[in-house]
Structure formats: structure tokens, C-alpha cells
Length: 377
Image (cartoon, rainbow, N blue to C red; front, side):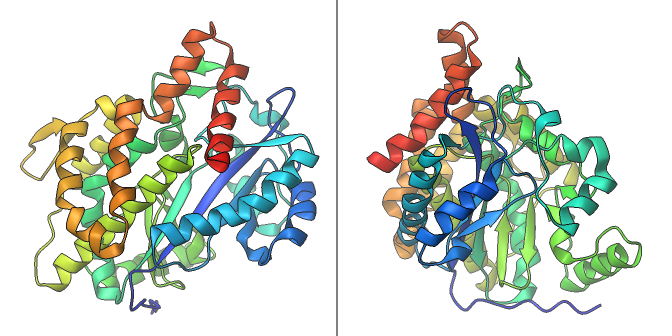
């Protein structure tokens, strides 16, 4: 099976931001995406900026093809400027986190469409449990032969991105003890989770052929890896991050993802063999970041060296400074340092729960406020 990769001559950028809809009074989820679409889309210059998702309690805001982090963030703000007033009219707030702290999956409604019905029919309980939200970032790559080596090397930084974005500590009213419960929930789907570390494009083509032949997938988009080639767009799609509520956090994370991919691709193009780790180290790092967040001690390399993730992150940001300068996102990359300083979302949510005596409505309020504050600021 031949899979063409529509290469991008520039390291373009695209962002997909999943947001839940919560009732302004009860703070529970609202299955009113269709009503929100009806009000918001006429106000948008491009209706493709707003997408439906698996459940009717979710909307996805997407950017056009952008060249800088600043351009992508301006695009998202423009869409929110239409979506937020439409949500206000329905007494709905937008909620950006990996999970909702107390909503029940039994009350959620499926978006109409054959694709979604097939997914739930196949995955059953696990599929119906997927009350999870994330951020996906696409970075353009020029040729298919560089995609998989960059993907495998990027897995070394999986725990950094997971820990920084972790925002799903509470599930069904219970603190799970994990910084990102979403990360471990999502991988229960049959084609989700960590990607295989193929060395050559032909191996990816053979894998896809096997998946199609055996009926595991009907379309390449159903390969739901945490990192995957988006062949029709000519990008590497990063799906590691939990949902994000703070526009400042989102901007910083997008800059980090953009810089990481461009740095790795530039080094590969210059003839460098990119460092990778065996799959068992990558898998362990995913679990450690999901469990411990910014307190995780992660495995750094194939030689099994370990380090506190925040210490390694500090050195990584210094190393990426020249890349950020070239991409025009120095300030945004520098803002990554503020996330550990003020606490990642999972830490902020736990702090609110503790201060309020376990009031999970207060937790939802705090997440909603963070997004609103970013729009007003």
C-alpha cells in the first residue's frame, strides 16, 4: 500500500483545541454543541474553524495553516470572539481540561454520524467512557522520509509535554492520584496510545495495509496515536497534551511543540542521527508523567539515565532558544517556565479542591475563569 505524504516546504503550524460545554448554573456538562454551532457559525468568517466531536458536549476550535505561534493564537482568539458570546446566550461556559471532575458518562449524547456510531459499537464501555479533551498541534514537515525519525525522537520529550499540560486529576468525583487520568483513559481505545517506532516509511505503509485489511480501521484517521503522521496535511500531529484552560499555557505549549519538531527535523536534515529510546522506556515515561506530573523522574536515554523532569525541562528550553528565535516565538517559549512556577492545571485544580473542602463545582468554576481571564487580558 502506498501512502503519499503531502510535504510542507515550511514548518507550518496548526492547532486543534477541544473544549467542553458546561452549564453556567450546575457546572455539569451540556449536550448542546449543535445549538452552539447554530449560533456561532454565522458569526465566523470561516465556519471550518469550529468542528464537532464524538460527543455533543464538546466543540473543537481549529486554526488555519499558520506560520507562527502568534498567528495561531490570534486565529484562535478570533474564533473564540464568536463562540463565547454564542455560548453566553445559551448559559454555557467553555471548559478546558483533560477531564471533567464529576460528570457522568451515562448522561452524554453521541454526535450524529456513521463514524461515531461505529466507534462506540466497537469499543463499547471504553468508548462511552471517553469524557476527555485534548489539544492537537500540527507541524509541517517537508518530506516523508524524515517524518518517522522525527516522530521517534520526539517521544523522548513525551513526558515533558504530558506533565506540563496535565489537567485531569479528578474523575467521577474522585481524585485519581494521577496528574493526567486522560492519558491512560484514551489509550484503552484499540488504535490509540503510543505509536510504533518505525524506521522507514515502508513499514508504516505495511502497518496501515494490515490494519485496513483486517478491518481494524477503515481510514487512516482512525489511527489515533498520541503522535501520528497527518499524511493529507503534510504534518506531524502531536496529540499528547491534555485539554488546556489558560491561553497563556496554550501559547507556551504550542511554542514548545513547534520548536521541538523543527529542531529535530533540522538536525536530521543536517545528517545527525536523532537519539531515541526503546519502547519500554517510552512507555514508562508516559506512565510516570501521567502519574506524577511535574514531580516525575523520567528516563532520558537508551542508557537508562534519569532526571527530575523540571530540571531537564530547564536545560531543554535553553537549548531551544535559537530555534525559537528563528521561528519568532522566543517570548512564547520562555513562557513555558511559568507553568511549573505557578503550578500546572492538575496542581491548580487540586489546590482549589483542597481550599474549598472538596467542592468540585468550585474546581469547574476555576477552570472556566482561567479561559475567561485569558480572553479579557
